[in-house]
Amino acid sequence: MGLSALDSKQTAYLRYHRDWLLRFPLLKSNTADEHGRELLRRFERFCTERVEQLKLLERSSHQAWRENAPTVDTFGTHCSFFRDAIFTLLSSLRSSGKSKLARVDPFAPDRRFPLLFKAMHGLANQLGLSGFEEAFSLHLLLRASEPESSGDLSFSLLPFSWEFE
Amino acid sequence: MNDSFYPLEEVLVDQSGWLRLLSQAAPEAQEWADDYRRRGGEDFTQRINQAIRFIHQGRTSEARTVLEQSSRNTVDTLRDAPTSIRNALESWRASASAYYHFSQLEFNRAETELVLSTEAVKMAIEERRFLLILGMRFINAELQRVRVARDRYRWDEMEKHAKIAWDLFENRRPLCVLDDESEIFYSDLQTLVASLVTESVHDGTAEEKLGKRLQRRLQALIAENYALPWMVIPHG
Image (cartoon, rainbow over all chains, first blue to last red; front, side, top):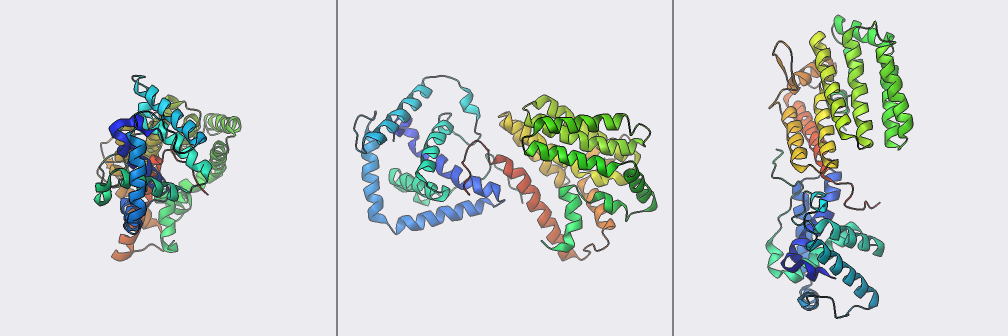
């Protein structure tokens, strides 16, 4: 989906996107970090029950992300158009130097992430995915692109280390 | 909610119900509360609350009109009122005005009003010590500063104010320092309020429960600011 423009930061983006979807309702409802980790454990249980499907996803995502540019249309015209647009957007941001976009989100490890998030999240919303379903799809992609991430359940509600208790 | 906690939480978090509690306090505080009512203090705060509702509804010109009228009111109608009453009212007005300017992205003016709001409370306490019942306003001002910093994308500043709010609540720093250099802490406010609530919880277990509840509510007030409103599309 055009994420190849992120180079080595693809998995960082997937984690960023997933965590925002988990974090938002937790912050709104005054729920602790631990609930976020519990949701990740639930995602992991789904994954371990669906090993074959995950391998299939792993193969297709690796194939898509090996491409440096979205020249191969494997998903149909509309998807290709969206992928091209995302790739172009990310490429232009990479070369645009300093930008105010760097400042819009204290959780973002890369200044391109918030803008990409808005585009991808907007698409998921149009497709009718709930936040939870969207987060799970991001988790699946993360697991497919980085199988060793299964043991990583780190999650934080706030952008700094702060123990309330 | 455990109803027996409500009068305490009203004042200690929601900043309401304080006048009713003062009416149950020592005669000096009761007289002050009566005078406050006679001079239209409750009507004044109702108008301020109406202005806040207008801001919530996006009716900003109406909010501005109400706030301007309230400002004139403290200058003219209440000219002869005791300064402690004027300061108590000024703190409500300035806090609401800060919110108005925040909603208009006038952040410097919002910050100025927040200073005026807490200064007014401090001066009120200088004159009438029982008015530390308004002490939650100091924490509220920090929470508003968290929000202002957030909308300016000033993340370090946002974190700083979040931690100050938490330090105030945890009694690691005073709400204010009076002219005689005495420090007023949130625990002083808690002690005062607990002494005024007739149905107060006095056994250790209930107090501990209340402490946890207050802690959770303040954590929520701080943390919810990090649910950046421009990021996730809210569902349902």
